[in-house]
Length: 469
Image (tube, helix red, strand yellow):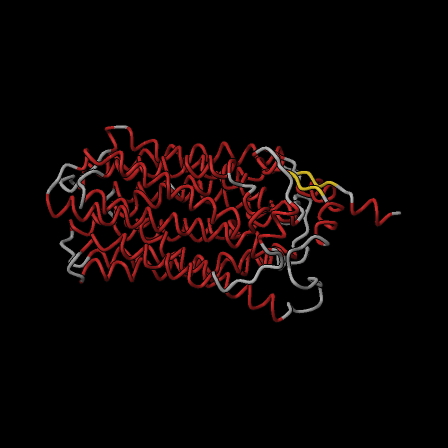
């Protein structure tokens, strides 16, 4: 009788709690967007002022150093938070302390730039990333702690949606003429214009932190959801049962390794233009604001996709959903690569092509959303309730390793290849292709046919939130 009731049980996502958890990610992506857009511009201006040659490579090295440190820190903090027990929970202490320290350090990147202290800028950048990456793993691990496995793609969609709203806020600054920079902008102009994004976003981060302290009772959430989380373990998509004391089976271990390798390559691709995109548009297309505007449309497209397409994986599986996403990303990257090369070589007006760039951004936003919604849940699918933090760290180790290597490699290409900075988007699209080729070796437990035959027609909102069993 008990088994029968269990088999008919309905799992339903708690949107309110998931949105609250996502606010930590809101702060992370907001500051991350400021960092990616403005730090390369700051570094280029200061290095040029010092008459440094091959500055693309040097910028790549500097932008990669923080990620190298994060690779070391994140697994340690992930495992440490798994074992933590306090009145604030096991993840929230790291989130609270991390956000507080971040709010103290982050403005000093722009302040050191204003004071024309390159070493100070680099130290502030490094401290900021180390602190943020230290609390990023617990912030992301909190969602799987209180969410049953079958609902994690939907929950991850909401988490990403919330985070991308933070990113959108920053990119909206690209529509303000004051923040526009081009290849002729002086160091003094750049110093004045980059200061405000750092200060404004730090103030918002503090507001979010205060809200989280009063809004999230982690221990209460864990207690309220423990039965659903336990039931979710029985609905896992792994080939074999994940036991707390046993290692993964050979099939599951192989799948996990393939997933992590693919994650590595698509983050190498995505981070390459995240790191150098603002410089590319400032120097090649003479309009830094266009990059911010594109980032806005990419983020908005991703947010809408989190809602509209979150149910696709329940029908065709996470594997093929991600493959479709990667194909869309390649289309967008190659489109930008070829058109930008043509504009640059023929000295065309980029303003005539803005609609095209926006269209490519929308396509890439959909693709990145399809990848993001499903990739993290695929990794933590192999975790049990006691080691989610460890598997969260695996995910971020793969992504951070990619982000440690790719700025250096693409910086070398841009400094020494005949295409210069024009090679950026060709480089990114090639790596996305490698990611697809790798990911195709994944074996899913259920076939597309099985999923379609079992799927029920639901609204987009229903697909985002619940699963019937």
